[in-house]
Amino acid sequence: MTGRLTRVVLDSETMGRLSPLQEADRAQAVTDLEVENEFSPVARPDAQSVLHLSIQDGRLVFDIRDEADAPICAVLLAMGPFKMLIKDYQMLLDSYAGAIAEGREAKIQAIDMGRRGLHNEGAELMRERLAGKVNIDFPTARRLFTLVCALHQKP
Image (tube, rainbow, N blue to C red; front, top):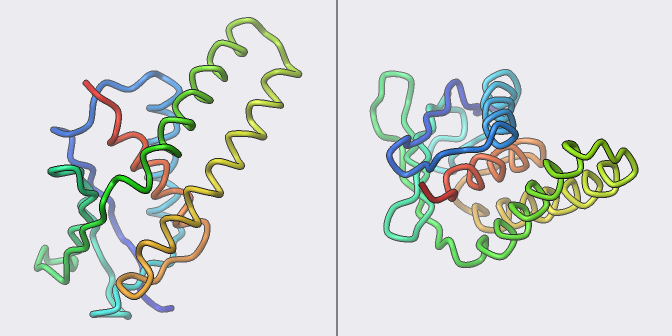
């Protein structure tokens, strides 16, 4: 793959209020994506892309544009396959925040291990759903799953 993301823009209108932990995860995912990623739209595999990511009408929208903001392609994915993973991920984040507040190191480590597992499942699902439309590597898929979870939070 030679294509990559140069910038990621989240639709702030569809994103709800995030907890400090969710906001930190979101910010880290965006920063990591902008530094290192493999993201190649099948329509233009060598493109340096800007991704506008949103949820509209129950669909995950990948509005992929070039650096001059001209459309390359749009990929719409049903949210249904992601919803249970997102719900489970949110529950783990809530538990993680509680364990941090209680200072329970063993519980924090156990929850973090579960969180990484769900993240991996979300990344695999992301790669499956984008197959044939956008080629991405596993770390990029993990970061995109984090952003989808942030977008899915209700205001």
